[in-house]
Length: 74
Image (cartoon, rainbow, N blue to C red; front, side, top):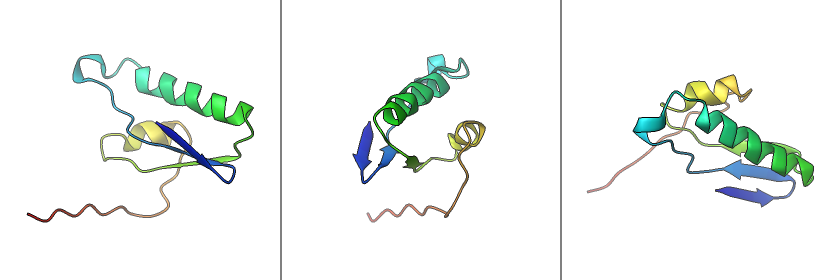
């Protein structure tokens, strides 16, 4: 999913099925999404990541800017 607001895009819910991980599919998908955004005037991108996706996004040029906390109430 991509949300766009005020010249920024936000990638969300990027997921690769376990059977297809390590094949570069998530990187290809993200690059295609970001290329499409850039062609439509988007100047920046943000996203939230799980620990699993951290290294993918680092490889794509993202940098961590704040820690993210997840809370659950039962």
